Amino acid sequence: MNSLQLWLALLGACVLAILLFQALWLSRRVRKHQRTEPVMGQGGDPVGLIPPGARVHEPLMGVTVPVSEGPLGGGVPSAAAPSAADRLDRVTVVTGDSTVSAVSAVAAADTVPAPPPRRPALGARLDPLIDAIALLRIDAPMLGQGVIAHMPVSRRAGSKPFLIEGCQSQTRQWGGVAADVEYREFRVGVQMANRHGPLNEIEYSEFVQKIQAFADAISASPDFPDMLNVVARGRELDAFAAHLDAQLIMRLRTQPQRAPWPVSAVQWHASRHGFVAGTTPGRLVLPGREEGSPPILSLEFDAQAALADNPHDAQVSELVLAFDVPQTSVVDQPFNAWCAAGQALALGLEAEVTDDQGRELSPSVWPTIEQDLKGLYRQMREHGLSAGARSTRRMFS
Image (cartoon, rainbow, N blue to C red; front, side):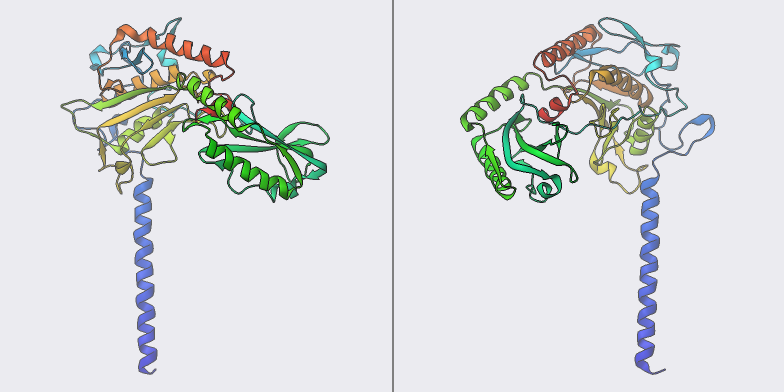
């Protein structure tokens, strides 16, 4: 073996050693990130996750939840962590019309509640209430495959999305365009308002430009609504929606004499009440019933702490529990879920609960927030935007 072969053999050995070391290091990092459940000690207590002197409470075993002035002119619920001697065998949550057992709102302490059954979500459909719709007429029916090939790559005009639908030749039903279906005409609708504001002249012009190019590609004749009329309708819709756009916020903070919570402890307590990891670091969600639907609740904390290599070492001192009123269906009972989850987390983590302005919560306005919510729900229904409906979710997005 000459010297060149020897050096090549040594170089190959070094490369293999480096690759092996890298694989072992990556494997160790993955195992650290996957360790979200604490090690359980005697009596079922998590070892090393709860601050010294803290107590692990049963879910929703405590006193009546207080509330204070909140973002809707009503209030948000609170739950000061009572001592074990103050805890009751059952807790009731008092709302405006009824008294609901809080024990039925969450699972037992030693079990993780199963998420609600998830139904397949229906695709979004154009709605004249929130969309400016242009009709595209064609001379002869055509398959969706040829239409899809010419659709715009981006389905947005500025900050406003638009949808393309076809009318099937056989059923004459409108819906999303499928490759193997024959269509007799098409329509395209741009959303006139969302949480970014109303549709403006520049965005509408971009929409017309994109759809005109699409119509030319499929030999269709478009009929666009008048721009000034569309822009005026968008402003009216945005002004109306601004009064209905609400989120309920509850902040949970560590008590002054307590240490911050390890991220793993927060994840463990939240998972006991049905929360799962969200799409972004530091965000846990209580899933909705429909596949692809917005979550019922969200629980957020510092994203940098969530990205730490070891969740046992990373600590947080504040959590934000929220639900988006227009996005969440009344059928999911988000208000009751919000109250129950907030009380359970406050008791389990021994947290102080405040509103979004940092004020302590008072029990005197507990029924007020429910009445405010009922008023919002009623206004939304009267204007065809029921909470959680497809058009409402698109509007408040």
